Length: 216
Image (tube, rainbow, N blue to C red; front, side, top):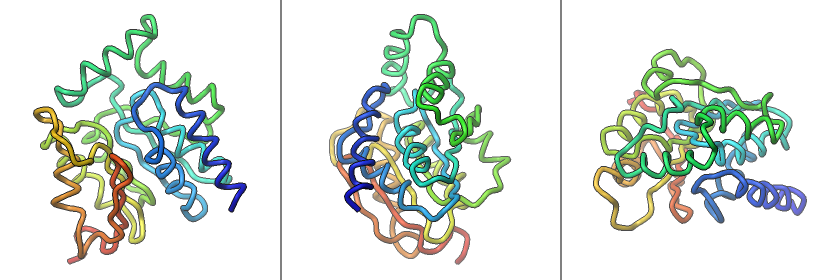
């Protein structure tokens, strides 16, 4: 246990070198969730930005020796109105590189190419052709109410019984207009009979799929 704790702490420390917002206890909880999965899991991350959460999950699975993180993003800095200016501002620091180039360079730097699968496209586009059962689903893309609801409804039917759903940006606070979509989903949709073990770590909510959607 001590060795795994140290390894997860190390991942969280390294992740701070990648631009992003997930940090501290929430970052460690995301890494720990990925680390805890059964061998050879399928992880889907919808909305990856420059790869901080990707690194946490892919790094955890590399420590375990199996599994892949499928990263869904159009890599065009799109999203809800409150988020887009932040994406564009951070990207400016990379001197003309595209968001996809920055993301791929981070994955290459940390030697995670064999663990990360890039799925370039919108959440809707990639979900339309998706077929694999999902062990862990992290939703962190468009945080508008409509965007968050669409991603949740498109992707959660693929999550296995016992699989984990993770929603970012769900803490109790006053949200900017059209930026509270995941907060609403966490409050309204992550409840029995479909979800159990619902808990929040700082700004990130975790839930276990108890009854796959569409089972009733």
